[in-house]
Image (cartoon, rainbow, N blue to C red; front, side, top):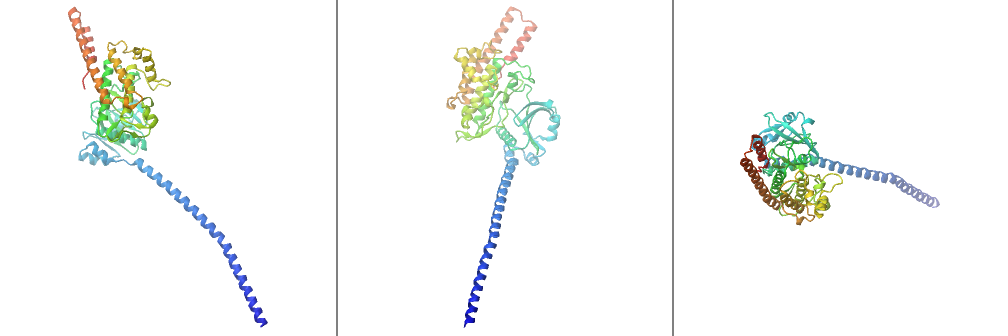
Length: 427
């Protein structure tokens, strides 16, 4: 009995010892298991994070490189044969009249995009004078790179010009899209921009802008802008300034550069969008609240009118054109506001009235600014009166010269030249 009890006691101790060792073994082996699980979780978290980043990057790249060509084809109203050519968009461009440009053709027409052919630049683009094989002179706008900003500007120009046909908008001739850049082709104007002529920059022709000519330009540009605002959806230019108004050989205004244009439905009062444009021409509510309306274009046009009246550059450093004009007006020195080159004009009354229109356009409150249709109506009345006055003055001069018998060949030639300057074509 004793031996049996002793054996049982020894067996229980043996079992207890084994259980203790097993428990200790489990505790010791559990530590590395938890550590491995934590490490695995960390690795999975890093993989998920990196995957999300790569996915976002690929998404952004895709959006930047994507372009809705089918939409462009429909808006350009191309023929069926032209639409098939448009499929190979890396080397061709299509015009409205069915002519197809190759990139190589435009490259040759600009002498390899040589600097001596460069006629303007700014932002993402450079503009070149180009001579096509048939001797037609055109302007080629090259949008550098193929990033999101370049593609967005390219699409804005195409969308706007495909919808718009007006004598006071630049004529769009075609486009070219390659993997490296986007190109737009326009009609070419030897006179260049209003900005170059007003500021006597190098490259502009010797063009004398008397007051009838300036009023003609203002009237034409206002008509082009009013046309954009009358479209459905309405088109907001967003960058109206003198460098974006081209002049024909007859000094007819052509609004250009629609890279920042935005469309707004009639059901909406405004758009909220990022700030863009030229600071001196941007409306105050757009600068402060990013509220974009057609009245922002009206404000910019008011600055253009002030430039035509004063000949001064509103973008000059440490110079506030609006404050300068209002300060002189408050002192009763209204006539000193006008450009010395036109200050002696007999059309002072017309100039003063245009100054009032300009000041209405740049009112701080958008609802106090006129619409572009109202601006066109006011300028049309002045334009017609000024044209009639110029014609009457010319007839009087001829009559006096004929009655005095002093109308010699040189004087007749001089009068003919004045006749050319004073004739203002009605749009």
